[in-house]
Image (cartoon, rainbow, N blue to C red):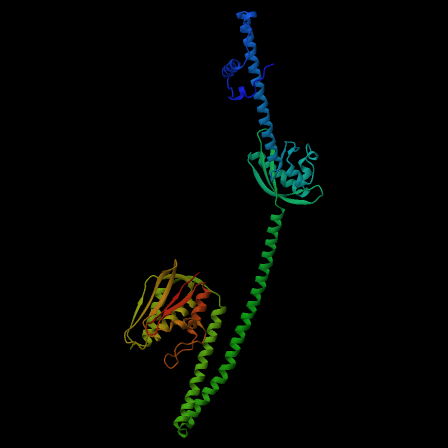
Amino acid sequence: MLFYGDMYMQTNPETPHDLRQRAEELFRASEITLIESTADVKTKEIIHELRVHQIELEMQNEELRRSQEDLNASSSRYFDLYDLAPVGYMTFSENNLIQEINLTAASMLGVTRSSLIKKGISQILPETERDVFFRLLEKCHRSNKQQNWEMRLNRTNGEPFWALLQVSPTQNGKYWITFTDITDFRQLVEKNLQLNLEMEQRVTERTAELKVSYQEMESFAYSVSHDLRAPLRSIDGFSLAILEDYGEKLDEKGKDYLHRVRAATQKMGLLIDDILKLSRITRCELTLETLNLSELAGIIAEELQSAEPERKVDIVIEKGLITQGDAGLINVALNNLLGNAWKFTSSHAEARIEFGSRKVKGETAYFVSDNGVGFDPQYKDKLFVTFQRLHTEQEYPGTGVGLSLVQHIIHRHGGKVWAEGAVERGATLWFTVGR
């Protein structure tokens, strides 16, 4: 028998002609010689033909052997991928008998692979899930499309687990199932749902508590208002009575004291009013509607000018400023902002007030600017603190609540408010309406 090893495996014959040609080349390259003295031409031809054919057979056998090795290796890789895949694979027939199952699926179900082959698919389905499974299987059959759903499967110990199933019909009437254990995911989802329910319950309880607190605050505010106003009216009334009835018996110093008492009680009344305003703004419900800020600002400007017709103030209002907000609260905010600008320009002969808008970081911001007395920038945060004032009451009257009201109103609309300015260089109050 002749062996040529790798000599004839240097190329891979593809056709009988190629195989024959290669066999001839290998035969000529061998050291075999024919005994010419004892063989005629015909015998030589037969021997030549037999030996070339033998080489062809050996080449084909070697090719088959290597192809088988490649096939075995490929098959081994396929079964490794199939059996050790991170998901379970299973096929079952039209009569719902399991025909194939990978090791991962068997491990998930807690069984050996052989114990499920030729067994009914119902064996791994809890009773509560069987009707659902077969209805979806019927849907898969009718549509001839893959169906995905979540359901529970049974382990052999009776413990169910959640799985994500993908069922696909095949060409030969079988069904191919892929499933993944999603028990941990489902538990996490259920835990999050429970946490959300608990959070909603806490929010509901907290909202109820806040509502009660607001009601108590409202009752307290009105009670304090009533209890404080009565003695204040008495102090103011008796002080006035003394001035009217006994004024001629008092010297100028005594009269001055009584005037101061009356001024203080009147200021206290204004403070009580402002506290009540702040309380109402904090607790009232918002009624959102489309607002024309330009028109609201124009009405306020006319009212300010009518109250002090002797003042000459250049008021510029940008047209077409539209937003969404609570009409009453936004009107209060604009009244305070424009009123402040009017007040703090009173010492300037050529006063100017402007109401307009700009884009700030992609958001529409509205502003009220003036060329009045301005303020020291290092104290800008105090502007919005209740009862904080940067100017004396003798210079500019007020209670120090106006800008605090503005801030509460803007915050309730989901917006921001801030101030820019410098001493004797005017001020600009900015605000956004977030809703």
